[in-house]
Length: 316
Image 1 (tube, rainbow, N blue to C red):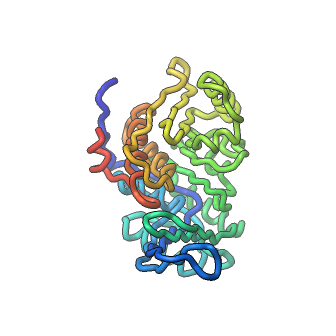
Image 2 (image 1 turned 90 degrees about the vertical axis):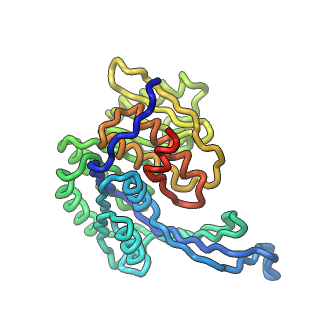
Image 3 (image 1 turned 60 degrees about the horizontal axis):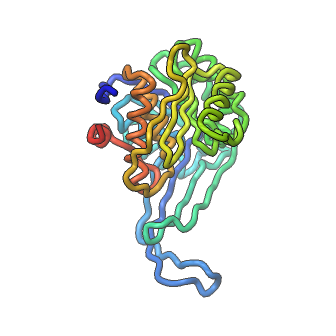
């Protein structure tokens, strides 16, 4: 295999659309069990906020040197304002449409002794009118990007995903989708899907061996008209399937992480790295190898995190 090269990502322009959320962390000390119930008492000593969901995808693109635009829906609330501030601080052009009836999705994690003890989710679906306005802005921004990422966290922000895929493909833009749920028909026509192992199993069923997996994925790709599918397989690494005639059907990369600390947000890093590398001129196999290395970096960090260009360069 040729030595892996890191392309120049400075001119890459990525448009990210999807479900954003605010990840809140409460770090504390645990020294006793509550007298009220058999649960630990956490004395909070530090709090932290990070962009999550599609917002984490966008910050991963920015960390890899790309110019990033983000479209999503938030509530007219403090959490939505916090997301706007965090994204602006990272140089991300965020079009966050406000829905007055919506509460911004928040995931609150309580961490004690470097272990996540509890996660509390606050979420609800946005209004149809706000989503339609976001679709119009999406269509306006399409000509100015090199690749589109649709980050589906199942929170209702991608109700028009079929139309978004159609518009992007008509404009000649590659569309990468991080899918959710069992209905992959809504992703028909996408350039690349990036499910994890459990998500793919929900759709194609449990496979017996690698040949069976390849056959099931090939059937799914034909059914949906996909160009490629990248399945992330945790400790087994990741496997890329391509539909183009004459290409090796499946390429596998072993896991790169030396020590897994936290897998939350790793899928965001993978799809971000794939989009940035493809938009920078890398082919699919090279993009996958770089994305695999980026994922190996972030799972060694606590919570939703990013892999920088310098960190990635150090793995090559």
